[in-house]
Image (cartoon, rainbow, N blue to C red):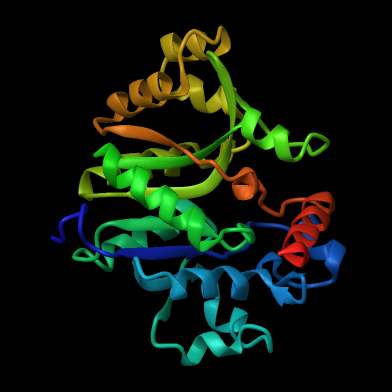
Length: 266
């Protein structure tokens, strides 16, 4: 197994559709959310390009129900000929697809996981996240943007906030799985994925003590995530990211408008 402190990461790029009609895909008149164009390029293509060009990424694996169909689009067709990009078909569960991709590549640790709607990810954010994840020594690391950082740049934008003692955070859709011990966290996510938008339900899955501590904001983000990880037998750590836009993924039309304005501004 590769040394997680030195090895290049295998990037797992989640691009599947969830059951039912995706309201954002329907809004933009496409079959798959990953093919929505932002600033003239499908989201899947834009994120895949950033990952493939990153010197710390060994391989990009696109995970979707039918990745070949996604890459037949004119805006993503370049991906089929790029030797840095492969794909793996999976079902409707994001965590299940991630688990299957890892099982198929047992010598490819560490893994960097992100999603096609993380359209603003850039080399500096990836570098900051990977450096923080490796330096932490954790089995699992997740990228977070502090609310104070976000509101300083985007005071009028809305985000979903995880509220801890001293600060609130929004997820950056970046996850680092350093070694096989991290599979405990992936397996747990498979059990609670249906509640992914319900923070209290996920906290409750770790037991009443952690739920109460979260609701009363008794714990910092590092303490709460660390305690949750210990419940699963892993060392879990947050990585604070200094870039406000890192937590802007494209879930709603207003997210799309904001992301497009930022990309055009670049």
